[in-house]
Image (cartoon, rainbow, N blue to C red; front, side, top):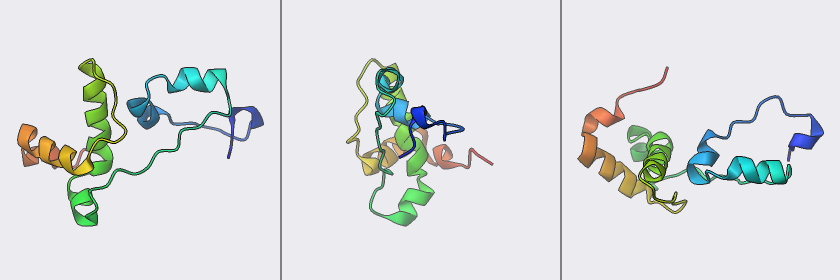
Length: 99
C-alpha cells in the first residue's frame, strides 16, 4: 500500500471516497496510513452494470444523499440506484457523459 509518507505517490483521487465518507480527508490528515478501500458497485448483472453506468450513478446518488442532508450509504443497492435513476430521469440519464 502506498501512503502519503512514502513520497511514492504522484496523485491521489479521493472524489469517490468522499462520496461515501465526506470526512475522509480529515481522517487521512490525522493518519496518513488511513485507507478506505472501495468496492465496485454492481447489480450482479455485468450487462446491466455497463448499460446502467452503475459505477457512475451509484456515486452520484451518494452525493445527492449528502446534498439532501442524509448520510452516505455504503450499502446502497446498485440495482435500486439503476431503477431509481430510470424512474426519475428516464433512459436519457444513461447517455454517455464522458469521452
